[in-house]
Every structure is written in structure tokens, then in C-alpha cells.
Amino acid sequence: MTDMTLRRYLTASEQPANLIFLLEDIASACRVIATLVREGAFAGNLGSAGAVNVQGETQKTLDILANDAFERICSNSPRLAALVSEEVEEVTWLKEPEAGDYLLYFDPLDGSSNLDVNLSVGSIFAVMQVEKDGDRNVLHAGRRQLCAGYALYGPSTMLVLTDGTEVSGFTCQHGTGDFLLTHPKMQVPEETSEFAINTSRYRHWDASIRRYVDECVAGEEGPRGRSFNMRWTASMVAEIHRILTRGGVFLYPADRENRKAGGKLRLMYEANPMAMIIEQAGGAATTGLAPILDIAPTGPHQRVPVILGSKAEVARLIAYHETEKA
Ligand code: AHG
Ligand code: MN
Ligand code: MN
Image (cartoon, rainbow, N blue to C red):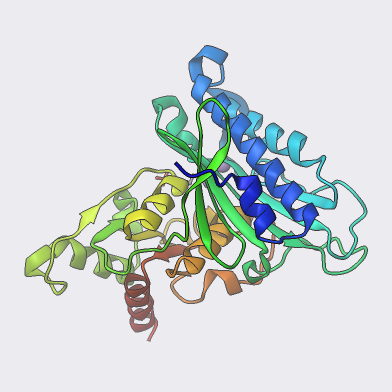
């Protein structure tokens, strides 16, 4: 059994103390959310909150409680200047921004349609920095993320974190609540025969996506010459965790139906953090036409097409997009 707690790990990483405080606050928020999720029906936490968020989606009670946990716990962090949450339309400023202050982007509860059916959900987060005193701009490209991570509320609660040097997975120990390093130096396996996409949208897809999926489905007789497996959990955190563990590719592409909105997933608190984690673990992340981390954002709730996972599969999908464009 490992005795490397998140605190010891962060201290050894020589990150600035204020960033360590913030990451520990995020971990505390995730612990609170794990408890809320676990208590489910006992605590009356399930079901709709009867409100609609900025995305036009009905908020679940737990979406709001999870957002409150992040706000309440992280707001105490010294040098945290602003919060950008999926559940809050405007940026929440906590202080007058000074150069080096932190900006926290988060999806408090991802995959919340899974809540009522007792399947895995998660939280996603990323940290960036204020460039100069008084600068209230939060729309930076994902390349500038200092850290990114997610918590997965599955059979065990896990926290997966990258500081830009490696990806580390911590498992929450029942009883003590400690996050212990159980998955050091996570790497996306290069070889894969698994893909994840919501195939109910097939009729809306572009030719490049149809081609990729058709070829996988064709199996041994098709151009790939081997059999592929498919998974779709409707919780991005669970999909990304599976890909980090045993490889694969995840797609939520732009299609005929969602293209006007930009896609489905949100850039600042879903696509960017996951892209950083996947790239740090040796995988790749693209819209199909450009690396996700290089997108210059136009709004805090902007949506983007997302293709990420094992490098060779992502490269193939980029090539299919280029062929379609030509
Ligand atoms: P959220 O619960 O934060 O709104 O995000 C849900 C996202 C993502 O986690 C998942 O991959 C996708 O939406 C599921 O989409 P479908 O409903 O099309 O399956
Ligand atoms: Mn989400
Ligand atoms: Mn969410």
C-alpha cells in the first residue's frame, strides 16, 4: 500500500505554496461531492433542481450542490482570483486580479444524466494564471493551463492530476479520506481497439467520422483488419479514465445538428483540461482540424468538437478530416 498522500506528492513537486493550497481545496471539494453523490437518494440529492443553466440544460440538484462545494471551499484559497463554472453564466471574481493570481475553471459534475441511474459521474478542473495586474481576461488558450485534473466518482473515488510534467492518479481511501498515489505516471496505451462515440447521432455525422466508425465496425473484413470494441458511458470523466487506463479514442465531434453551437462539450472546463491530461499521458487531442489546446477562446462557455485518446487513432481521424476538407 502506498503512503504517498496528495499533500506529500504536491509538496515534493515544489509547486508554489498557494497553488498547493488551491489544489488541496479542489481535492476537498471533490471529497465533499463524492459524499453527496454516494448518499444519493438518502439525502434527497437526486432529481432536477427545476432550474436551467447557461447551456439551456436542466440542472440537477447535485449540479448545484457540487458547484456550491467548489465555490465555498475554493473561495478561501489565497490568490484565487476567479471562478469559471459550467453552472454559472458570468465569471465570479473573488478579488482584484494581480499578476500570478490563479483562475479556476471547472465542471462541478460531469455526466449528470448518470446520477438518477447510479452510474459514474465526475468533476473536471483546470488552473491558469492572471497575466498582469488588473487583467480580467479569463479567455486563455488551454496551453496556458498550469494544472488540470478530474475526480471520478465510481466504485472508488479517484483524483487524476497533471501539473504539466506527468499524470498521477490518486485513490480516495475509505475512512481516512486521504487521496493516495495509486497510479503514478499514467500513460495512454498506444495500441488500441476501442472507440467511444454516441452512435445514435450517426445520421448527423460528417463523412470523416462515418468513415472512421464504419471501418472500426467492419472488423477483420474491413480496412483495419481487426475487430474493435465500443463503449459509451455518457460521462466524459469515465471515458477519459478508461482511455488513460487501457487506451482508446473518445469522440464528440461537430455534426450537422450541433455545428451551429460549436459542438457539444465545453472548451474551458471539459475539453481543455482533458486535452492537457491526455497530451501529458502521451496521447493527442484535436477538434479534427486543430489541437484543442491551441484554440483561442471566444467565451467562457464556448463549445468545441473533441477527439482525443491514443495518438495513432487521433492521427488517423485528423487525416480523414483533411481528406474530407480537400
Ligand atoms: P454535463 O453532465 O456536464 O452536462 O456533461 C455531459 C457530457 C459528457 O460528460 C458526456 O460525454 C456527454 O455530455 C454525453 O452526451 P450524450 O448525452 O450525447 O450521450
Ligand atoms: Mn460536463
Ligand atoms: Mn456538468
